[in-house]
Length: 286
Ligand SMILES: Nc1nc2c(c(=O)[nH]1)N[C@@H](CN(C=O)c1ccc(C(=O)N[C@@H](CCC(=O)O)C(=O)O)cc1)CN2
Image 1: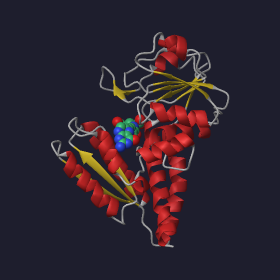
Image 2: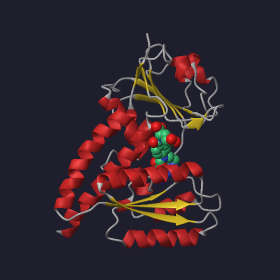
Image 3: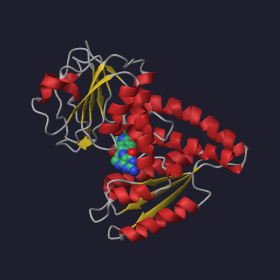
């Protein structure tokens, strides 16, 4: 039997409808949420993601500002742009599109964003709070995956979740969020020997390797839920994930496709975080 496809586009649209209602409410009270996106250089994929973020803001009536900087900009100039946005009262959320050119220290840049406007959830203060289970902005992709699981009625408590990948923006926080929902979590990565021996134990397998179609039927347990975070191009330049969907579809109980799986949720949760930040204006004004 074929596994169910978890449609991130549909689930994202549902969540966006409730965000829209809250944005409308805020606007009636004189507050327009604002997001600033900084794009350094001209990486084509980054340009597409940034343009999609802007379009999504526009559709919702969220104010958005794009700061485009050249590839050879100094770290100092980038930091001063962030300072300006930190002080700008029309801006609730600041996001620096990653990856950054190699001569810029990503961690310095992220740390310069005011934690109150860190709608990407990458600032050390946000990460620390997430680890402690305290309220904070959650990183959009793992947050989106948790929402997908919730909307698809997949209970993670007591399940064995195996995560392939240990990036700060996906793998590591993903494990933490699953742990907080009582999953038993195992991390795998490029140095894990005998990957299939680990992944075939997974009730929930989250794949974030950045390698096209790396995971096949031999890596998954019968009836597993597979979450594919990868976005790659195959030999025909078609979008594909880190999982070979055709190879695993008859073995899994549910899987996120690429496109229209995890990807659309990343921007949905960014809108959600920006809305949460805009709501702070009430408490600040009092
Ligand atoms: N500052 C950040 N940089 C990056 C993040 C991030 O969360 N914050 N994540 C990724 C890229 N990303 C958002 O920035 C992102 C990736 C993919 C999608 C998406 O909707 N994908 C679609 C396919 C889109 C396509 O045609 O290429 C899908 O999967 O259906 C949205 C956002 C790295 N950088």
